[in-house]
Image (tube, rainbow, N blue to C red; front, side, top):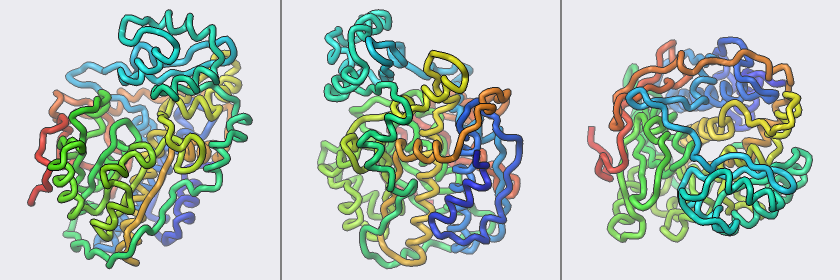
Length: 463
């Protein structure tokens, strides 16, 4: 099984970054500390280190001095737990109908954290939409369905579900084959532009100070990316739609961000967004491939209006293949890609077993932040507009490539409650885990407390 240092070195080489920078990173703590047969702890620790080191590498181009970076295994594991509380209350992670169900043949995982996804799944199976349908009723109905057929019906109806597959079956699936040769962090030049001269950093300034990031993400991986960039000093503005729901974790993942509302169906709001883009360095979005093109927000469209920008795109299953436009979440990709069965076999149980944290979301989020800083560095050195692409499914293939050790399931694990710190927030008193990367031994500090959508106007502040 690969360790965090080996993984970081590989990520760094893949992007042809200066090898001398690697000597500035220290990994501390015992590994593994998350009970899994996969390299979950090392994936968390290395992806956080990659994001931090890439930001620092960009900062050095802007005049920052030498910095020692460190990432502790337990801190990284705690951050990836996603644990948080508001006024002492921890919201439930899953809606009542979300989870794994036995079918006539196989198992099916249903994602029902959003009411509209829940209702479309229920209707696809001939059940009544809404809270009146119980988990027991859904289970009884699915016992009469084949898992793959139910998966197809629910997704075609606009819901979100995945049939449990063996890893060998997934590796031969057309979707897995379509993305197999894609880079884990795909960075491509999408337009010509002069290098944007970033301000020289003042002493003690964080490495991404004065970098403006528009964050159009909603679930977990994308919001984690924006929160991570904010931890390194970027000015991040979260853009929400007034017509779409959010998950409770927005209180945690909005640390460090401004939060504005825009309705892209309104011409005046599209114009407001365009004005924001004109002076943004990074545009991050987590919608399905092609879904924003109708609003003029395809990366090439954005680059034509804001030359020199870095666009970062997240998808569930990748930009190629028959499932490129399919809805997906960490739990669904874990299920379909064979992790739940592999963990069950390693643990000696017949019940499918999820990994201990939503590592595909968290690692993908940190890799998005890594890719953003790498592309910003290229923009400084080469000019151009750039596009960074990450998918949960490709991150899953990467995680599998890191090797396995069944002994990892017996590790003691951590109590994430031991790592909680208290923050001000617009939601109440927020208890959450700090960012695991340390710069010269210091914890990263977010400029803004997390705030409810619409708390700020959709204009960049003047400091």
